[in-house]
Length: 301
Length: 185
Image 1: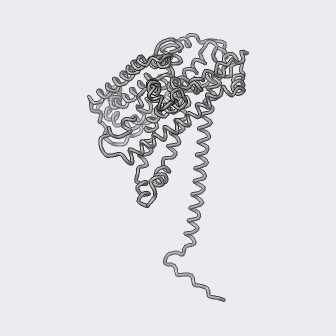
Image 2: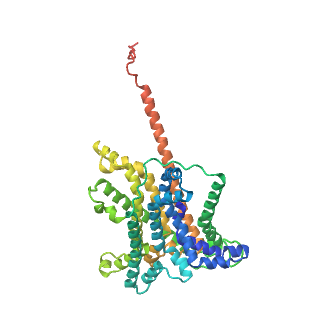
Image 3: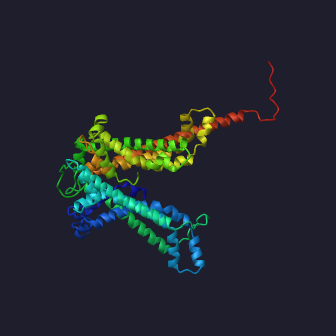
């Protein structure tokens, strides 16, 4: 799951594009171009697929702890009272509502503010996404600040509206139905169910992680599609070749983005962790008792 | 702050640091410093969140005990708290390095003319693969150093404990009769 969080959406999108493009990995290796899939990828369906695969990680972290602590108390109570299986499931689901809503808001925020898919799949398919619209205004010459600000505020307003809706839904009902006992482990399911769950999980990770990785790696080795960055043309011969890597390492200037990002990553991470430590320590060691509003981390986070 | 989209944050940075009054005082617009500032501001909230748990768990009783025994604030914190949370700090730092290396929206808007970061210029698959390899190399190198430091620490502790054990073994047992002194021959 952490790997899913670490892989940026634009890399996943580029990986799928490299796999399915007319001159992509599948077309070159098998000689068959999956045109329907490629067409589907370069559109809203592709954007939804890539964003959903990443959203699963956020939803997992929001819900997993609550599901683990849920135990079998509610299911047992439902069975004792003679509820049918679907009603028992609904009772359990309703007790998960706060966690599910939190997961929904988290995934929604990530999806709405995502720029990776907006600048790859959506831009290639020429359908406008709000973050890419902000980018075009902010990157224009001269920069169109009023337009960028207006669209940015609308994005923040959408996010704020969803947060308010979540708060309203949660405050309208009492979800404190827990009895305080430690959650018991659910009884082990049958072998067939375990296998089905393992197959589903395996398929998910193949699509989410292992799919894009060969797309990027293999396309860097294929003669027809390999590029080494900076729009440098490499061998057009068919079959596997290391021409892209040879071009990359023979011209040190092409590797400068890696060194720059490495330096910025090391410095940025050091700065962010230092700020994180200082603010946490400030709150822990010098924080005055009182409303959380006055705590630095309250408004910084 | 975590909910603020990076692209909006980046647009705000451009707007603010491009103002003539700000540029006169702090001329970092169109330099790599602006991008670095964007990364730090954009990722600090996540670092705060991720470090809050370990710091809260470590508490401040150890620090208070250190201070009561006369240690300076920094020394008391380093010995009582940092020794408990340093693994978490390193993990958060590694996570940040990996995420910032491939961060796109801030990099796209705040990149300086002097050089584009990896996320912006990784148009070639080979460059992307080299970038991923660089991140894996950093994580492996830091993890290796951590492992070495832990192994060294464990070895030192074992040898220190063995030295203490041998000292204790040489001490006379309480209540035992004192050894008779040998007189001069």
